[in-house]
Structures are given as C-alpha cells and as structure tokens.
Length: 441
Image 1 (cartoon, helix red, strand yellow):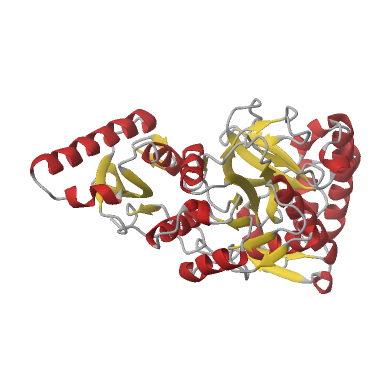
Image 2 (cartoon, one colour; image 1 turned 60 degrees about the vertical axis):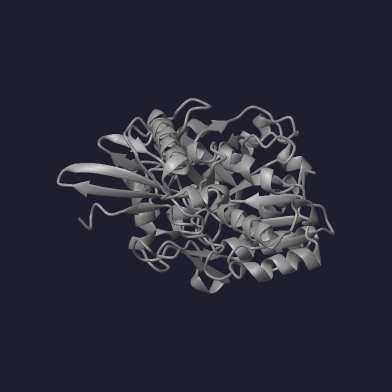
C-alpha cells in the first residue's frame, strides 16, 4: 500500500522541480529569520536567486550538531517561540541536549511521513499497532503514534521496557504491526521463547525497526525467530524524528527517503565530495518544509549509500541502504576503521552464538586492542569452562569466529565467549554496543 500515491510516485523531473522551489524558499526564510544562517549564507556568498539548479545546493554551508548545541536552547528556531507547540530533545549524553521544536504544521508533516512509513511496512487502516518506541523527549514514540492515528490504526502506546507486560499485550490485543528497536525485538523474541510461546502463536506480521544501526544478517535472524517481515525505518531528531525514510515491505531493499520534504546527499566524510550511487557516504539532509527548526545540509554522521533508481513497488523516491556505521562512533583501531555493524554481520552467521555482543576497546601503552564479547547459544552454555570435548569445541568456535572477524575488519580481534544472559539487553531504547576504555586508561 502507498499512502500518498501522487507524491510517492511522482516522476523524478517533477520531484526535483518541487525540491528546487522549496529550497529557494527555505534559504530565503532562514536568511530573514535565523542569524546563524544569515551569517553563514553571507560568508558563502549565497542568496536564493543563486540557486538555479539542485547542483547549487553544494554552494550552501553545512550544519553540524555542535551548531544546534551552541545555540541552545532556542537560538536556531525560525519562528517565534510562541508558535512552537512541541519540543523534543536528544538525551545529551555527549553534551548539551539537541533541542528541536515543532509548529502545528510541522506536526502535520511528521504525522504524514510516519503514516507513509507504516503503509510501506504493511500496515492497513484498522490494524492494531503496538508502539514500543519510548515516549517523552525522545522523538520515536510520539512520531509513530500520530502517524498511526492519521492512518486509522488502533494504537497501543506500550513505550519501552517491561518486557513481560509487552508480551501479554501482544498476546491479548493481537497487533499485526510492531515498532521498536531491532535489539528490543530480539529481547521480546527471547522472552517469548522462554515462556514456551511458539512463534506462530504471536500475531505480529510486520516490524518497523530503527533508532539503531542493524544489518541484513540481523534481519534474517529476526525473521527466523518470528513470523514477520522486518523493515527498516530511519530518522533523526534534528531532521524531524522517525519518518525520514522507510523500506517497503514488498522489496525490503533500501529505505525510501521522502524527498518532497527531505533533500538528501551522500558525501565522502573526508573530502565532502559526492559519492557515486551505491557507494557509502555520510548522509547530509536539508529540510525543505520544516517551519520551527529547518536545517541546511545537516551532517548526520550516518554512513549509508543512496540508490535513485525506481523501485519495483512503484515509489520513485531515492532509497538509502541500512546504516553501516557512524562517523562519530566509528572505531579506529591501529589505523583501521571498524564499525559495530561489521562485527554483527559475523556474529549472526554462527548458529552456536546468540546475536548479543559487545565491543570493548582498550589500550596497553600505545597499542589499541579490540575484544568482542559474544554470548553463546543456550545449547552451548554447559561447554563454557569445561574440559575435554566440550572445551575443545568452544576453543575451536572461538578461533573460527576470530578468524572470520579478522577477515571482515582487517585486524586481530580477541574473542570472548560468555554465558547466555551475561551481556546487557535492550529495554526499548538504543543499546550501547561499544565500551571504549582508551580514554580511561
């Protein structure tokens, strides 16, 4: 199902003409209303009339998360604060929170794009929708909530955590659609199996998964454990929240960016030059219709590739791949770039392992070391620490995993196999996969 057929199937030529008109209007509004952008445009020597084609987008300056924090809390708003009817903010774990505001028009756009996401994920008006994204300052829960209501779904605002209660609600309310992080869906699957629930007893048929990077291997693991289609949703608070892009359930090969609202580029993170279609680059977004907090060429830090070719589902908007890593949580180990997603792609290939893992980076004097801790599957738990054949099997498994990781990452990795239930679990929010202890040392 396509929620907004005229827009989502618009010919590329018409779409690009719409983008250019909205881009000119955006630059004019920001130059008149936001001192930060007025000064940035003046330094770049750019005015709205200079934007004759979308190629001229490259003349505009970048916006970074630090710019939003430097103007905390409301210094980047493009409307009077009294016109802002909703405020969300990031957690602020690496500094001041990133504050984002929404006018009534912004909330309408947000509901619209989230409705598109749910339709692309297989939802239909009248379905029961189990929303396990967190409610509050985090944008996930409320964004999906209002999109679901606009579409005509029956919303169960479960939020995150309290896994036993979530399972009870899923059994009793029979939702067809669930939205949560991929790591939390695995937590739910494990809890269901521990209670003796067979996968076919669960009514879920589609899962809208996002808020953290995941891989194709993780998708296959989720779909092996549960009788549903796992589709990716992508968003970031600085752009709008969830709803920037979403996979279609028919193809599951790239998330459609809703380009009538969000102009996207993929750039080499070092040279900041465009990469070719299909090549990974840092995603850079310009919000074409946001009123309260528009951003121009916002550097997301997310690494993914873009595919502008039409999709068999009928949508014409460009598709972005799964996020393969971030420029700011990318690990540099002895000069080699390592992403957690590379580790995940290996872990889920082994039936003897669970999909729960953690990366620990340490430094002895000047030499970095990477340890990957991985839980074994329950069937192998008794063999941990055992001697004889069991111990030999664990040692052989550890060596095979280490060799596979070395082939993927290009560096030596210490592998530690631990008992089931040892590593942290997601309780609905983003799961911390990396412990970088180099600064502590």
